[in-house]
Length: 258
Image (cartoon, rainbow, N blue to C red):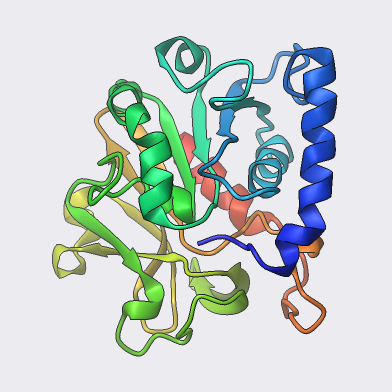
């Protein structure tokens, strides 16, 4: 669900450094006032070090750039109705296992459902996509289920180690950083009945990225990590496409505008 081996060692120090700067000035590092719409990015015990910062970079570098503001139990603001009222996006980054993550975040479920249902936008990356499900999770993907890709028939990845996975994104072959990511299943694979847009599929034709409605809001979910930067890759791990953010930007833009 999250890059937690070698990458955790690489990004941990950087994440602590960024957090220290934020604490010193009393606000999240990326929260300087400007005219960009606000995207709240969860940073806390349900996220792995470096994952919130990578998601924040993706959002701030998107074609429609957003202003990323960290929220969580140890940030200036937590995930609640007041913080969400000033945002257009809430992003849940990657992390560890679902069960402990849910223990940390289950209190957010009612307010997130209300906010997204009233027009908000939820973005879930790997663990954040697992948390969009309902067993357990926020329940933001009705009519579909969220499961492990490695447990599907003919999966090309068979363990929870960090790797690169092949996908077809908008009918184009691509590769993405992957660690125990999600697959999304609609009944009968009828995503039209859910009102969803499938962005990507794995080689076994299961869904790797999807954008779906929830109430009057939108939910964009991805199993692999389009936000991964060069530090996520161990020396023996290479993305044949290079380090690119266009797939993540497509997820963000599609979720905001569909």
